[in-house]
Length: 286
Ligand SMILES: [Zn+2]
Image (cartoon, rainbow, N blue to C red):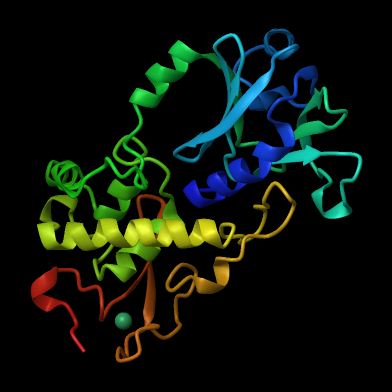
């Protein structure tokens, strides 16, 4: 499932290919990715000038003229593919749901195998209201440890569930939540309110590090995710715990093994040695 680094990678790939062009045509092949009738959606978008492309949490936000925004949530298997006449086979859509014809002569295709993704056209005001319901951006330098600690302190949720809650913090999904908790030596089931200040400092640092390194690697491809260039993200090989249950802990002086547990309907991966359930008094120190 695309998370912040994958959405950011797609945004960076789309920018040079679609900004400055006008949406000439809208062809909806599957309207279950929309939240409004296809004719209304199409009518609102035809003629819109693409001014910029950005991201909020896991969402790709395409800014249009006349105070409109195209909001794309990639869901499980969504892709945004800019198609030009020079497009190579690896970028070809396999399950196109919406095809936007552009004034460049190319297309922007929303492709989604399982169609859990959502594409919406919102007014800038409606987007502002939606955005305010989302938590802060973890990479925003204005987001401080104090704010992070304050949010954690008020919650009895397991820390992994807290990190996945987009109203608490935006953009983190199960892969990077598990990786950051491992790097910060915090058990995924620890109650958020028990995380100490020193741990919160480390956790925020590791969240930022893991997200930035994943962006640099073009994201993580486990199955479906591709960059706007149609390539696989290269961060998968660097995952320390996610999907690695049964393997040895990667810390050189730890003899622990990666375990998998399921709670909140999602798998969590951790090293029982480095990430004790009870917190810092039991933390493994080589
Ligand atoms: Zn370990």
